[in-house]
Amino acid sequence: EAGHAEEIFLATDPDREGEAIAWHLLEAAEIDNERVKRVVFHEITKPAIEDAFSHPRVIDEDLVDAQQARRILDRLVGYNLTPLLWEKVRSRLSAGRVQSVALRLIVEREREIEAFIPVEYWSIDAEFAPEKKGKSFLAHLARIDREEPELPSQDVVNGLIKDLEMANFSVAKIKRGSRTRNPYPPFTTSTLQQQASRQLGFTAKRTMRIAQQLYEGIDIGEGGETGLITYMRTDSTNVSPLAIEEVRNYIKDVHGASYLPESPNFHKTKAAKAQEAHEAVRPTSSFRTPEKMMSHLTPEQFKLYQLIWRRFVASQMAAAVYETLSIEVVGKGVQHEYLFRASGSKLQFPGFLTIYEEARDEDVKSENETLDLPEGLTDGDLLKLLKLLPEQHFT
Image (cartoon, rainbow, N blue to C red; front, top):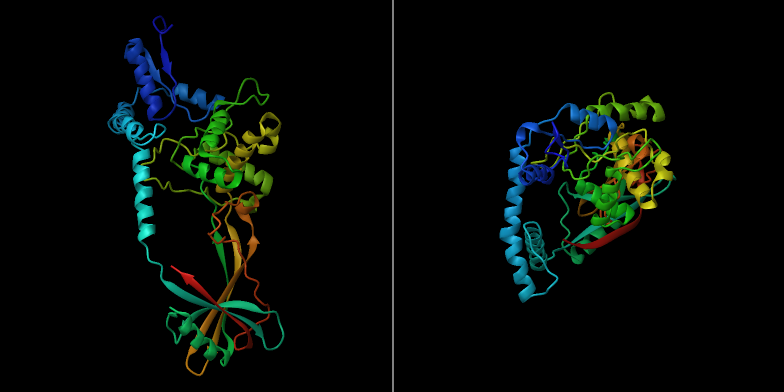
């Protein structure tokens, strides 16, 4: 077919591998460059494909060279190490330019952990209540005689507890304010895999398999198959101006103007050498809500699409606003002067949290956690010490 065609369009994937495959096709089929045009699109939708075919380009030799370098590294490292592992260690093990480096990093970190000597330290919290009636609250010991407290052992703590039990406490300062919390950027490949693991229990492999299906297209009753997400192999958080305009219209229509920032949110890509021509992983249309797509998707496709859709829409919504309250408590003992602090926050305006909240690791304290502080306290109010709560920790 190519031998007789006037024009040949190469529409392989928009990454290094895709570029190299296009180049290899030309080499293998011995096609002359004059009749060849390279087209790239990041979503399989009619407008994206029409736009790509109206702006063809030549093959990017730099991307081809980059892919060739990766192949050479695979052969130098993987092809040589893997047979050695099979022979000396175990037949199922393999090595490569990525696996070997990742394993090295894990081994180095594990050795650091094994060599680490934990150091004991203590903290002291206290439960206070207003003298003139009111609910109690917890505060954390922040200063002893205006210095950072050093509490290396139980003996030191026991000495302080005796002094604290005899001290007089009062409110030194109450400060009210507000803080904002900005939305998360849209997904890259790695952040998508992390959140799909935390929120959906999907392995990285399963996430990429389902994402591939959503990218290649689903029959949603619009004639043929429609790609529901953009290309899922990306390290960029860039979003096309058209997609930003559409999602802003969606937010305004569905949630109202108060949920829409004055100007689009710009999320900086963290990867130092991200392929900026790529976009973040996002839905191809914000108006294709998960609820509308549900009947066309398998349960696992729906779950992943909903995660991608919510993260993207939230990334262009207004920040969440919290009302904050902090209380400083001063205590005068026989031996020392003490400063305790308590702080809390209350969600005032949910903003992007209306549709998306990131799942966190168990040991990371959520920003959303609030401390219930008593109302009506004023500077100088006397406080009763109800309880001291010393706790041992190790670095």
